[in-house]
Length: 219
Image 1: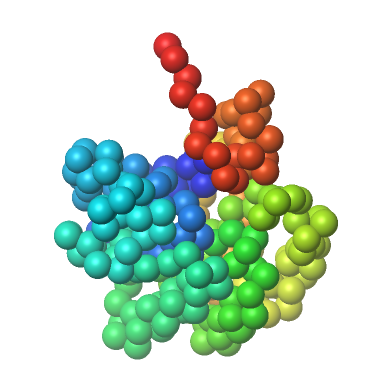
Image 2: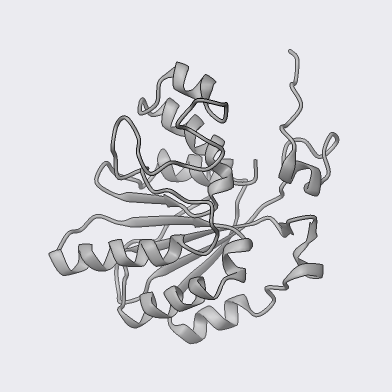
């Protein structure tokens, strides 16, 4: 739920047909399926059957899909892989002289992984200005708050020292969410402040929202 407005702003905003999108926080696959359905890249039947036995559309995105597209087709769910994959795709585009962009959605769990930090260094060193990392900063991880698990108080200082372009935004204000132009040498990192239980604060705690389906709201 915390990523919904971020992806809405992206998919109905700057994301173009030849851009690449990578869902590094693969546990948000059901949200990606919903958006792809609205974009005509997933049928209603496929959406209804997703995350069920027998469906190729599992709780984490598959690598093989019926309709290959740059917006999906990257298997994910093992946190820490998305920024590295996105950096490789962005570097390939840069070498080929392509103007298309690469967008990667990550979570707190991704930033626990050394592979993510290695990729962040790599992207800055190679001046991958066509790479955009979208951080869904909902402050919740596993069974608690990141303040008790893995604090990210150093994040902005670390990114600045590496050479990333940064912005911090309200991740639930679709109208104000904006993405940087691919100008200058720096890759782009967006910190979106969100709430895991956004829209269901009176029904679910942030930790519950991490694991439970939202309750059905009857009209």
